[in-house]
Length: 336
Image (cartoon, rainbow, N blue to C red; front, side, top):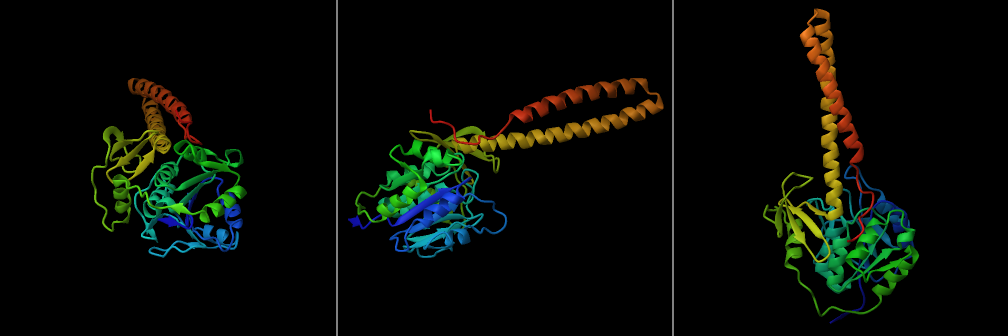
């Protein structure tokens, strides 16, 4: 069988990605024979105006995605805050499933679901953003016969996501945004074979778990390791591929290598701030007790409280030094 072209375009962006998104959609024609599904990392609080911004960017109609909406060519479906955007049976699906790579919405669930649902009819675009959300999804799309392109790294405000996608899919095209729009149009009008559909049981189960009204806990595929989930503190299972590792907990939170490192850094920093707060509180308590002992002429207690203050101050300085050295990776790591 043959399709007239790739009629599903999935786009992911994060930091520095709004302007490239506007440019990309502004360059696409009103008669684009493909639907465009967009994920931008955003805060779960409040309402997003992204759909309105993208609707004004060009002739394509952009609107917040609605659950079970039929996907039609010439439309732009924009992920809503705190909901994953998926594709299933030719429809939009919205779910508050577990965060992936620390985000909801995240790129990987959309890309993987599109690969499973539309196979070779999918074209993926990754724009500016930090870390590596979308890389696994790009790998799935390419594996299922789809095409992948990324924003030119030299043009990105934050090249982490495009670089990670290129590492996962070395055949991905790297183009300036305006050329990406021409690439999308070309892909939508170039016939593709849909005969060799690839099935991936693990990814199928993952997406079905997202779509289930009552998700069930279960042991994921992979090796149980001595890590805990940064989100829920549950046990973590490592799933290895030829290029990298993925970390999944029983609830379904999933982390790439880079996002796991960042999330663990955040967890350590939170713990250090708690320790700093408790040590500062201990210093205040010791100072109050030291003054009380001094007023009463209690020399032994006075000496004890003074020594404890010195030890606590030293510990506080050490913890503050450690806290200053723990930080997030602003961008994805280079592939080994």
